[in-house]
Length: 130
Image (cartoon, rainbow, N blue to C red; front, side):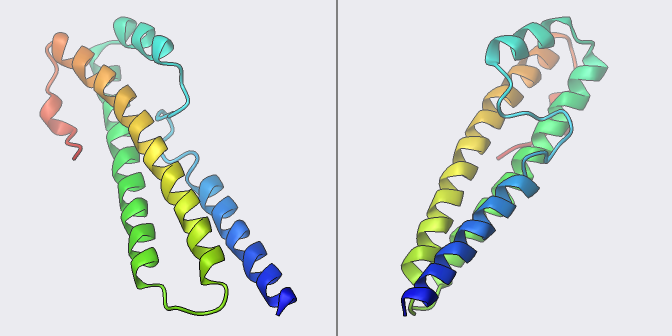
């Protein structure tokens, strides 16, 4: 029983680690850890064309993270009761929290690029994010 719980704990942790690393670079230019000040400075000097590429990268990254979040939430809702369920739910909750933080960070940076693109006369309707 103890070994089974340890194994489930280890597998849950492994899933969480793999998910975080596999989605760390969702979009080449979309970095949820880039300093806001640096994003503002960068947005001020970028051309509208480059701003569009950044806005598109952030838009795609946000949509990918939102889809992953929805998937993890569905997994939590449909998880059957069994031994080790608590461990897997804790791992999923940790992943959900990480995804929510990433989405929020990506969204803040996305809004900066889109705002600057709009100020420079670019078409922001190409980059919808919900």
